[in-house]
Structures are given as structure tokens and as C-alpha cells.
Image 1 (cartoon, rainbow, N blue to C red):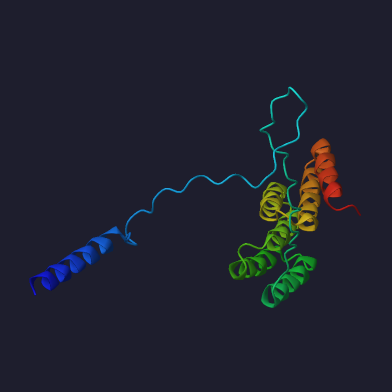
Image 2 (image 1 turned 30 degrees about the vertical axis):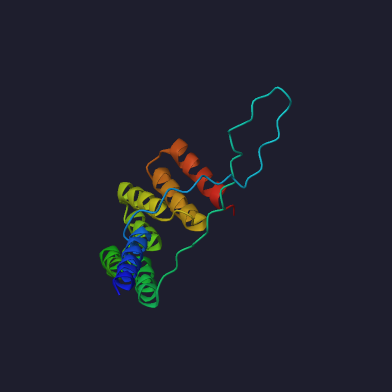
Length: 177
């Protein structure tokens, strides 16, 4: 009987020792040997060291996203255009500013407000608003072109013809016609 108890103790002890050898999921796994790279080596001429510089990949073309006006902003801009036609610039600016509260990041509204400022003779402010529209319309060449045309108009109105020509050239390069 003693020998069967000894076997049982040995069996339990070996089972416990074997369980200790199983790695815990909480322990770091053993380091694995490095796998060879799957990219083939670069072709080199005999006697020339292998090149370590990779050829640059072409950048993807930027996605053109021309902004549009929502229905409410479109209605307010339409009102403002009517108000500009009747030389009611303060009310026109107020209409555009209401639209800007609805769509604060829309460069088209900055262009519209710049048109109001241009019409009322505030050329410096018109230029600044045109520049704001340019900076807000990255990847929107048609909108940037409209903003640059407005900037050119503000320069022309102040007699800055060289700057006006440069701004007009930028507008034409973005959207000819």
C-alpha cells in the first residue's frame, strides 16, 4: 500500500511541476527568432554596396471638396445680395453674419461678407476676409480662386495694381475662366 501512495504522491508532484512549466498568459512570451524580410534585396551591380534608400512613393492626389451652403445659409445670402443691390450694407452684413453663426467654417460665407465690405468701400477688411476664405478652403480650388479674385478687386480699389495682378494670377491659376 505504501508503494501505491508513493506513486500517487509522485504522480501529483509531477503534474504540479508540469503545470508550472506552462507559460501564464500574463507573462511575456519567450523572444522569437527574427524572421527574414519578405522583400527581395535591391538589385546592385557587382562590387557596389546594396542600396538602403527606398524609392519614394507618389503622394495620393488631394481630395477636392468644394464647400456648399446649407438651405438656411443660402436663403440668408440671397437676402444679403438683395440688400447689397439696394445699398443697405449694414443689413446685408447682418444677414451674412447670421448665416456664419449657422455655418462658421464655411469659406463661401467669408467671401460673401467680403463682397459686402468691398461694396461699402471697406477694402482692407474685404481683403482680410478674402484671405480668411483662402485659408479655410484648402483642397477647394474653385473657392480659393473666388477668394483671390475678391482680394485682387480690393487691391485694385486701393490702387495697388501690382498686388492686384499677382492676386488675379493666383486666382486664374486655380480656376481659369
